[in-house]
Length: 200
Image 1 (tube, rainbow, N blue to C red):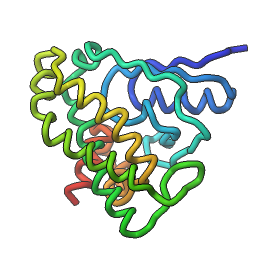
Image 2 (tube, helix red, strand yellow):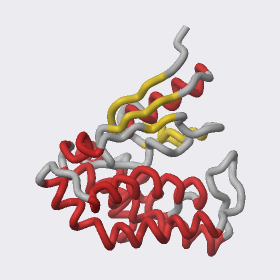
Image 3 (tube, rainbow, N blue to C red):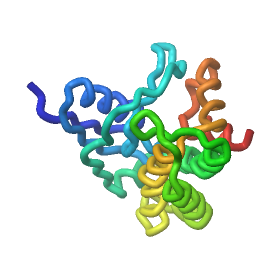
């Protein structure tokens, strides 16, 4: 019998390995090859139909046991992945604010009231994106690692994940989910659709 699940790849691969590890009740190690979502750190998987339409989110009782990210591997990925991750992370603060105002539940163990710490993480996520996003993208375009890229890898993968779990999602992700029924959706990344949702 397997004793551990290891997921290497992008968001859909990592979400799949989270589901497998949960079904088998064994530890999970994830090694993302891009910083395009917060999938590596959160305790849920987004479920899609065979046609690619958003179905639901599947929540788990625990987060991945180990997350290993090699900054140089992230730098070698197409820069579009990093930008998609920044757009996904950008939604964190706006959705956190909306959920705080409506006193909506977060994603921890079926939903609790959000915390000030969660809001602080979401605000820090936004501030780091504004401060370091452009420099990180320039580094990714040259496939080099600089301090800004290191920070944005953390923002896209960890800070956004902490912000989402502790505050929940709202309108930007709802728009993303709705777009998934369109044929054009197959050409876009999750974060790109979420970024469009932020603008809406």
